Length: 143
Image 1 (spheres, one colour):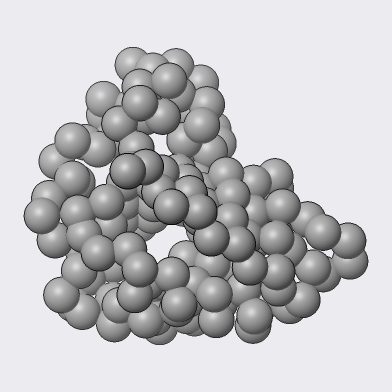
Image 2 (cartoon, one colour):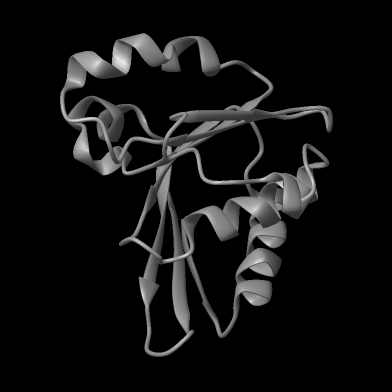
């Protein structure tokens, strides 16, 4: 399944995130693909808010902590940022296998850097700059 949206602002990107939340029933692990500043964390803000796991203001980038956990809405949301990791063996310390529970949605920024994650992921959400503040967001789910 593939579906695309074009947004013109951060608010619209969060709105797409809220729409995506209804489409991403757990358990799922997805790669969030996009350049720096593409809006990956902004999209997660909308997803977390729609799931009832966190407010949009509570969601921040896990660049330095690597993992943020949000729960309380019935779905456990794990938001990872692997930008600073370089080796597959560094993934072991994160406990990604333990995150993959029946009630969890695991969203991984920069996961495309790791072959093992690409092979295990249920798909990806790609964010691309489309000029100015515009973004193209594409959901690709594996069958």
